[in-house]
Structures are given as C-alpha cells and as structure tokens.
Image (cartoon, rainbow, N blue to C red; front, top):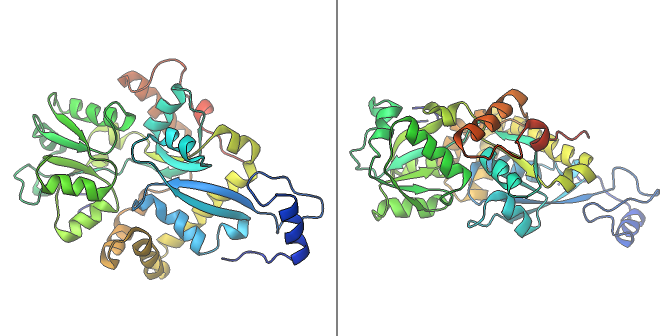
Amino acid sequence: MHKPAHPRVHAASAAALALCLAATACSGGGSQTAEDSADTATEHVRVMMFPSQAYRLPVIVAEEEGMFEERGIDLEIVEQPTNLQGMQGLEATDSDVGQVSATTLVQGWQAGSEGVFFCGGINYIQTTLMAAPDSDLPSTEEGATWQEVLKALEGKKIGIQTPVGSGVQLLFAEALAEAGVEDVTYVNVSAGSTTALAALENGSVDVIQISPTGTQYALDSGAGKPLVYLPEGPSAYKDLYGSAWVAPNEFVEERPETAAAFCDAVGEALEFIRDDANKEAAAKILADDTGVSPQVAELVLDQVYDDFSTELDEETLTRTFETYVELGIAEAEPKPTFDSLVVVPQG
C-alpha cells in the first residue's frame, strides 16, 4: 500500500508603529502612508483550517519559524466549521484563506460563492478507506485489488467526511461506480478522525474515510485496518487534482502581494518540512499542533508531504474541472475553467 502502509519580524520603530496604528494600516488591507517603510507594513491574514489535519503543518511551520512575519503577514488561525463546505466556511468565519478540494471550489463557485485557487496544496485527495481492526473485508495490503476492495463495500455503511451531495461525496460515489458498486449507505461522520474512528469502533459504520493525521494515528494505535489508499485506485482519485489554498476573489484582486507572500511562505515551509535536518523540529510542531504522539508525527512526515506542492498545474486542473462536468459533479454552465477558478497572484 502507498503512504498509509506507509517570530523574525523586522523591528519597527516606535514612531512608525504609532503611525501605523493611527492610520489603522496594521489590519489587513489597510493602505500605508508615505512615511511607512515597506519592511514595517503588516497585513493581517485570517486562515481557516480544520483541526488535526496534516495540511495545517506548512502554515504552522511558517508561523513558528517566522516565515510569515518576515514577509509582513500577521497570521490568525480560525477553526473551519464542520457542518459547512469550505466556501461557505470562508464566508461564515470571514476568513481570507482556506484549503478546499477542487470539487468544493467548483460547486461553491457555481452556487454563487466567489473564490479562486491562488496557491497549490495537495496533488491528490489523500483519503484512505479503513475498517475495524478485526474486519474480514479485503485489503490491498493483503493482496486484493482496489476493485475487489470497493466491490466488497456493496450493502455496507460508509462513514464519509462531508455531507451527502457534497463534491467530495459525489467523487467517492463515482469511485464506487467505477467498481460496479451501487448500494451503500452514507453516514456523515465529519472530517475529524476522532468521530470517524469512534463510529467505526461502536459499529455504527462498517468503513470510514480517513485522512492524515488520522490515518497515521489509526495505523500506529491499531485502531483500524486500512483497506485502500484511494489515490492508488480509481481514476476519480488518482487522475484528478486534490485540494488547494483558496481565497475570496476580493482578497486576491485587492491584496495580490499578500496572497503571493502567503504562498511563498507555505512553499518555504514545505522545503523546511522535507529537509531531514529539520525532521525532529517539524515532528514536534506537528505533534504540538494536532495532539498526535511524536511517533505518529514522524509517520506523517514520512508518508504525507511528497504529495504537497504550491504549484497549480493548468493541465491537471483543466482535466479535473472537465471531468467533474462529465460526471455530473458540476454543472455545464457556468463552465468551470482554469481561467475562472485559478488566479496566481504576482508579488
């Protein structure tokens, strides 16, 4: 099996700081006076993220290592509501930035939520299907094909991470259809691994969808049996784009330098995370942020971040959007395109 088996702020002078406060320019989007120097200006950026998710780490590393501060970003992290899709969550929390799947972006955009990908995130939707430890369901680790694993889900209760009708759920349904599965019962157990694993333990579902860091926690503790890592199976996962950093159009259009600086900081943090010399430090940051044990944090570092990138590949995203229309996950009109859904800001 693939991966599952698998503060440097430039000091401001007191006078400059007083001027900044008087002009209210220290809050995001404020204009700077002529007396303000470029290296004392700060932009407030509110980032919405789910707790305990591996995609948080580049942001947390960039914050703790001063990568945001040296680029003039004052970061605030807020929790993503579990009962809202990502684009709705951005609006509800008044956030500047979040990370959502490509399906969520497209569906939100077509429903009238303005937002664009402006920085890459994860090349695949890193979902593992997991059963109870003593389950007799087939597993790719035991030699089964992904088709055999999915076919065995016929008639089962599946704990899914997002509501029925969401883009992520419809994508999973397409994966099941690719294997000829027609009859399953969906139970929304949310994206939090604690709730999903509890549902698996008490038998209210037969199988759950789980993502890093929950995947690695379950593997380390023996809390679940991995059945298949979906990016290694159906084309709906292995051939289509995963998730990326999204922002309201207003943020990218009015604050392009801030958006570019955010992405640059995340990219620097990814380099930090992948450097073996920083493994102990990165593992500690991940453990402190998510609450996983140090050994689980190291497992996440070993298995997860090769699939992360700040690049937004036009060919892959175009194929993804077009496939969504073909599958009925997205409407044909307004047509989702790279130009309408992706803006790469220039810093």
